[in-house]
Image (cartoon, rainbow, N blue to C red; front, side, top):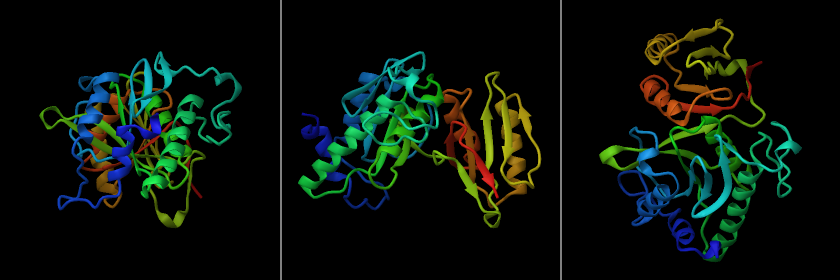
Amino acid sequence: MFAKSVLLSIVLSFVNQPAPAGGFESLQGFNTAVISQINRVVGSENLPLAMGLPVEPGVYVAVSPERITIFDRNVATVANGAVKDPMAGEFESGKFAKGVGNECRSGCSRPVYDGFHDTWRRLVRESRTIGSDIPSRVLIGANASLPARLLVDTAYAATESRPTLPPSLFLLLNGGQAGLRARPFVILPPDGLLLSPGQRALGLTIKLEANGSFVVTAADPRFGRTLTYSSQQELGLALRDIKKRYPSKETMIVDVREAGTVDDVVQLMVLAQDHFPNVVLTTGQPVRVG
């Protein structure tokens, strides 16, 4: 039974242990379990190649060109870079998902939402039994070649189905000799984000285009322009210049609604890490100042 599985019990038993002196939780056997599942479903060699943080305990998800699993449980079938959703014709993006009766305001796919909803429900029940909180992290290992939109859809399903506060989100990476690593990211609220003028937020957004170019805009009216770059090298130089104009800003939004792979997102993270280390992913949720 899934709720009684060894892997589930491992996560619940250790998620609230105090972090060691290095600042990260360590759990003997957890990385082995995650790597085993990633290799079985995705193949660690197919994860984006990049460095990141040590992997900490949490709910781990594997996303391959054929399926999505949560822990060791299949929850959805993938084909042509998207979830095969038998109910997809019954709701549109931005509507309520017709799953177990709960809301998916971002329009995330029903099978993945239902899979996470069931997982969180089982975790809550198990946590009450052993006297621990449910995991606060979701670790997603996705094939580097998959559309980034599928990654974001999975992240929304994980976030909107959680019964308490949203989880911290991490993308799993192939760190080469360093082994499995992770990079944090966040997603925009399902209904978008309205910023107060007093916040003086930049809202720097990079939209990935189907032709491989990058369109750069910002929510701050003072930015006042739309910039287009045809290569990562050009974009890197532009981000350096933008940082000089806005030295206190550290966040960039990456819009993957039309194009971009999981690997494209990771390469942008690496490209911008010295200037805009905080990454927000979106499938077109608006950011407004007003």
